[in-house]
Length: 218
Image (cartoon, rainbow, N blue to C red; front, side, top):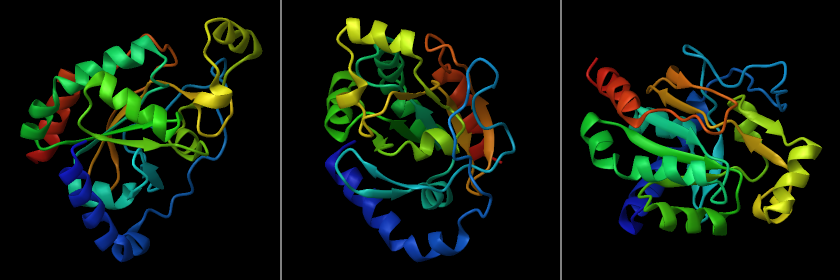
């Protein structure tokens, strides 16, 4: 995200902090990881989206509840990390669609478990002009119902590829999100969702933007 845009967003969110504390959804978010073998990932249409406060890749606080109220429709997408070629390809696809999303009235936010330093590298690599939020403790992964623990077999395979989530993830844990994408309205309600455990599958930006446009012009 550009420096001036970050400053403007941070100032707006800080100024709205009191309202955010009063108006945040009271629904209790999910606090556990899911089992991909038995549970489907992600919040569903009509669910209340979590109003968490996370740090962006530059260390500024961003309250999601205030973001929904002031910048909706908000597109929230989860990615695993800059080490994942499928994530990078998806993010580069979004980078090409930022002008279209802005014209439709939407705001884009990426959430990842990777460290802030790695998130900055991913932004540069994918030419991302957006806010990347660092899910340092896995709260967003759990609250959006997209998080899971990497099984031992997959962990060993990743280590063989030189992928070490002990150091790449901010939490130091082997936890990852499903590559989910949500469109959230000003009331913090999920109006469209893409959820799939298969890391090779991603939401189509054009489809998402069409949903944003419909929501923005209601």
